[in-house]
Length: 342
Ligand code: PEP
Ligand code: MN
Image 1 (spheres, rainbow, N blue to C red):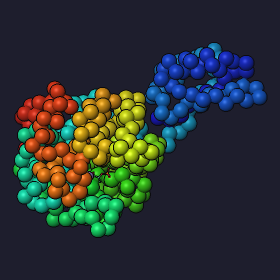
Image 2: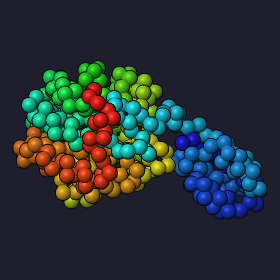
Image 3: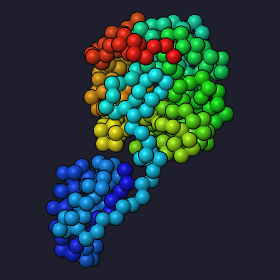
Image 4: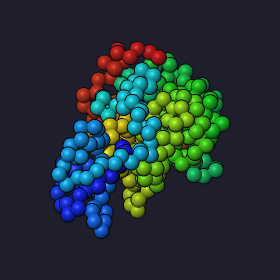
């Protein structure tokens, strides 16, 4: 994802060179100088390998090609296919399902959910023990004991665990119980938390800040990797727009850019984006069409009485139908046979 600077010879036709670059998936802006023009290739262009650079350097209008250092070298070097427990995330791999309730509400409830999801081809069981709530009077999660509940429930049904850490001091215990440590949208810019999560040396599910640019999101991943995380899976969960009919606006362009252009693993979370269950299926399908490596879906046995995010939870007894509707070739039993119990 490094930026290229291309100096053209005097009098060169910059537009023609820009056309050649665009053909290669390289998007550029031109800075005309008194004598010659410099083209800057945007960081979010396709990867320019040695052959592409040699091709550009050989164009008759080009005087010199400079490589500007990448702002995220660790992310550039990160493997594009990541193993998390027994599931594999990759832009071109079959999508992974991450599913469960918003919060871990009780030991019995998380076992009930795990029992059902274990038969539906879900890879990772989700549920929050430490909950980021807008109101201090809202349910804050059961904390550490809920981590034990979700781990045991997941183990019993052959699932992995993804759950959120909100503060640096919570990271060690979350990393102990989880296969994938979640950083929530409200904490994407919490640099001490990113450092602590990296130091735990577990893969991280990095939710996009609700008003974060893509570059800020990538740099948050760079923090995690620089501090020791073996891999980062990005999660697009909607950004704040002006439209009130949904909780947030799912940014499918970001999903396509990260997965198709940069080859990064991106999970789409239509539940938190829409905030309403009737839009989960179409947004999930759209996310997969944009290249998602997985889907994060909230489900609850009794959404009307959920302690958080009830309106977006798909009733547990309808989860199988939802998974089949959004992933027609998804075969729950094939996955389980291949993976076995954790
Ligand atoms: C969640 O996953 O339950 C959650 C709180 O998500 P977000 O950080 O995307 O709001
Ligand atoms: Mn939630």
